Amino acid sequence: MEAILYAEIYLFCIIIVWLCKYWSDQRSSHSASERWLHAALIGFLVSFIANFLFTLFDRILPPLFLTRHASWLFKTVYHVMLCFGVFAWCGYADTECRGNLFITRKRVVLSSIPLLAMAGLIVSNLWTHRLFVIDEHGYTRGMLFHLEMGILVAVTAAFSVKLLIYASHETDPIKRGHMRLVASFPLCLAVAWVLSLAGEAFPIICVAITIELLCLYMGTSTQQISMDKLTQVNNRQNLLSFLDYKVLNHSERLFLFMMDLDYFKKINDTYGHLEGDDALIRAAKALKMACGNYRRRPYIARYGGDEFIVVIESTKAEADALLASIHENLENLNKSSNKPYKLAFSIGVGEFHPGMDANALIEAADSELYKIKRARPGEHER
Image: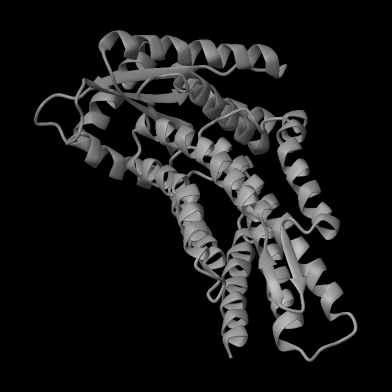
């Protein structure tokens, strides 16, 4: 009866993780963090399936000739894919905090060396029996199991600390909350490991990982709702919510940059809308590059069409430096793109003053932008 309950819990966790994977497959976004989360879902899903099959062969099905051999195989696959799932989570966490450990294929290969070493130790258990033993007395963990769990907790904790530091500088409360949720994974893993020391009557590690994956998927879905699909910056709906919060909660001077691309209509008319989309993506990339190195990270959103907004809480000198950095990064992208046209921003800057609401701050920046556009020669050709 206990074995059947154990298998039922694993089956329930398998269904939950599979549903998260299925829903993830339906998304149109294929960012690096999405791909890593998808890999983590696959890794943990295969791991859970292997342990579910182990329970069937070892504890529920009638004795068969291949039962013991199948039990060893499934339990080995369980441990290998558990490590793979944790490795994929590390990739997800690294991309969430704009890290560079998993940014190229070469670095991914180098970062996977500890995983391959651990996988080698797990496979060697078929001869050493230091990770687990399956005999006439049943399944028994060895000391290598605790070494495995200790390494997994330590590695994920390192990425968790990095995420928490990055989150402390994030101005968007939705992103900050999601990063803190992601950073809770090693704590979840450690608590499950400690509780599992009492015995294996209940699959605590499986349940803990499933709950964490479900929370990560829901958090990622919330972020996707608030993102502009083309440029992968915040959308207008998220911007308005953020501004309502920020005008009431800021400790330094608050600046809003309202900007649009010069002669964007001419790019669309001359080169087509696909080229226009590419221009918007490069413009958003320039904004991300310019905003990436600030202590308190500026907030970027696409306001609509070719209009973008950047909000920065800083000194006047830092705001001026960001303004110059936006123009510089866009010019650098112009030089490297080899396009037959150049992108440029017209930028109006508004500063928050007591008594303003979000709309008043936007209007202040938009008014400055309008003055700049009117003063530019050939503006009527837009």
